Amino acid sequence: MNLLGLLRRYVRREALEPLAAGSIAPAIELEDIEGQRRNLAESLRDGPVLAAFFKVNCITSQFTFPFLQRIHERYGGQKFRVWGISQNHLKDTREFVKKFAITFPVLLDGTGYPVSNRYGLTNSPTLFVISPSGVIQISCIGFSKADLEAIAGLAGRASGRVVTALFEEGEVVPTFKPG
Image 1 (cartoon, one colour):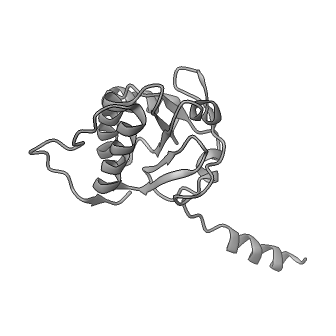
Image 2 (tube, one colour):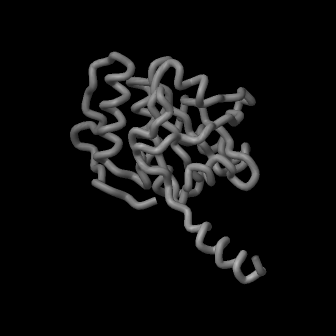
């Protein structure tokens, strides 16, 4: 194949699209900000995992993460895990975690974002709830009130806890906020 043919093939292949619900989740094995290695296959043995990909300077990620923290506080544990997956350097990621009081594990994607690329990320944040069988149950781009409510319901059922309203009375929460 000549150079022009290779170029055409490359350009057609490069359009990324986030993995949809029903897709098989690619492997994740990354270090968290504390240096602990996290492995998706091992974690899925106990229950679903919410993988929340983000950038620290993304306004929608900053808006979304306190609600993910709320899900973690209510339902997180061995039977349902929340992971943040940062596309930033360690120092900036630690500052983000501190600023938003995040207590769930936050992992660092590697140089060139290999995990983000396998998941087809185009926007930040992008959330994937992965079932113990390795199938993506929920795929969400940006902030979606309905998707976060669905994630909270799934997390509550998986953890065996009573499901309560994720959004508190009087909170002003948009239906959608693009990432």
